[in-house]
Figure 1 (cartoon, rainbow, N blue to C red):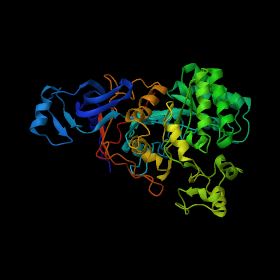
Figure 2: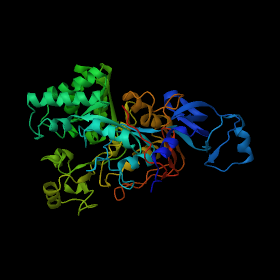
Figure 3: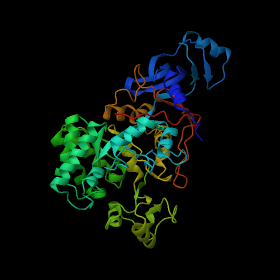
Figure 4: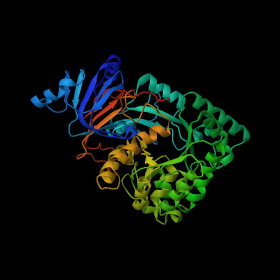
Length: 492
């Protein structure tokens, strides 16, 4: 379990412990850095960095034991309270998950942060230091108020929020997801989204698939506020499979009309059924024509959603060319089992909230997506009481283990997809980089050992090879063990 910490201890961990990281290979795509460098962290930021040379620093040593050679190497480096020997390890910016689904808020008005079941703790253990919730149009709580909870109580990782169109659509009284919203409901939704953006949300998200009653005009009414503020719009688009092209163009039209930057969410689960090559060409064509659009994808060939969602409306088997057995229950009495017609209908009727995994995607399409220069990594992680898809605990180390070590991506490319690309997309100028003045969110990992260990039977198993995770300069994870679980702040 995480070590308990009072407010004073958390503040000390987060800000006042001057930390030197030396001897590691720094991979920092934002600065085109791939070399041995030393870093000094002070007051929660990168205070100094320089290519490695003969060095020295006093202070408490973390990592490898000191030797005479180490003492000699430390002779010219800045003094520090904590010294981490990263020799033989990779040092890179903390990972940024541009697309995940946040932990819920309990009846006591606090975010539910059970270390064994919280998705934020899963994120932290796999090197994510900033997580973006409120995706697919869905918020678990008013997003502006959620950010205030993070600011008040802290969180395992830094948290940014999207303003979920579908959430505010329901708040405006449009409870029927298949129905068109009235003018009054659209006006109320747009006003609420505008307020959320003004109060710190970094963009607006849409779950068009999940509320098919919305049309382009309704989306534009809310995206306009984001466009005026220069903030991003993301979407789980209306359809997948062979209908993905029309669905993508609907959303792309929003970007072209309003000049708002777009993010097409989890494209593996939208075009990963044999359509990916054509889909990526379509996106490239729109980019060349001036639409500011990028995409995210997770490195798995199965998606996850609630069994009651519109994804499983009539016609889903024809769309995926499959039968009921492709669906695996994540929770309830059928947990871990493939479904039948009878169990599918039972769960859809009585437990529509239960999560399922659907094993229907083409791994070749997923690889094609993740190798594309304008596709970044987003886990799409979602958990319900600790149950769900292994992507919530393994997506980021999996990209290195399954793509870099196999030669499909360079380490620089992979780290970019997990750091500077999402940071720049979200205009987080101090995240996703290790230059002087940047936030001291840092991951140190062993390249030879890093790998994802979560699977569909044990979706929360932590990865191997993550030696240190630092959030705002505080030591959050050491050798896979959570040391401080409230260092994260709200990101506005």
